[in-house]
Image (cartoon, rainbow, N blue to C red; front, side, top):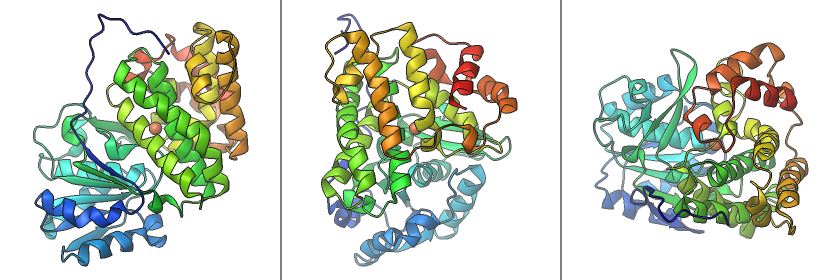
Length: 389
Ligand SMILES: [Fe+2]
């Protein structure tokens, strides 16, 4: 493991979320709504989750406990400020006092933003950044249906600003959900490609958080275990969605990574993910990250040849020499990408040579650049994007 400076001071926001984890924990939703004083629930979700029957299952769990709920299922793949405004309008019309988010990162982040928007003056976009909210939000209960973003335990809500088409993050302890209901049963119906891309997003969280310059012992304990779990279970979960052990391991891995990354931020992959998910590109977050991850690891490893030795061990690679182990970690990530059907390059996802300077200029504004393990310039990012094209 990386060594820890005895003089190092650090912050870990461990107080935010009560986690209920395991097959069947969805049944405890009414009890948690009551505990937080919820009388009428706004259920924020998307059409895909609804089509899979999960939204109705959650709504039925509430209604059978005589808790009224109103469903907002218009969350798009990359949710934005206009979606938040529409959901807020419904929340106000229906006089809801608690928000339940059901879905992947987009639905959960929208739910968190709506809860904050209900108690803070509009527009929601003015709170981009860390700790900009004036008031605590309404209580949120987050129910993930993917093992990916870790949004259920994260204090970030990432959205597109629909005026500028740029992705923004609203962050801080006031954004935390009150409760995460992480029920692996709800991930059993997730299709293989979504399992693959969201799982690689979780692995990217763990690797970037573990290896960046804000390394700290509590986050490291969480993200190291996340790498072990994702390394063991992602390929299995993609190849057999009904594998309950793999689904359990993946949901736990993504949750641990999400918890670990709160105070550390991430790295180049996530700096690039914001513009790649913006404008007309709208590259799905997990897919873009999966393609970029081995290229970014190769760049970082050049600066610190032993950087990924711990990552290799966590991913199950036996290699005593730290330089060789670090290289083997990158090879292992490439192999996982191949085994789970990740596209070869960003070109196939819509990135063009002409767009690379604009994407990289935007990425350089990200707070993730400052903590990347190897200092980098816009020219470095452009070279990475060209290799990943
Ligand atoms: Fe991510």
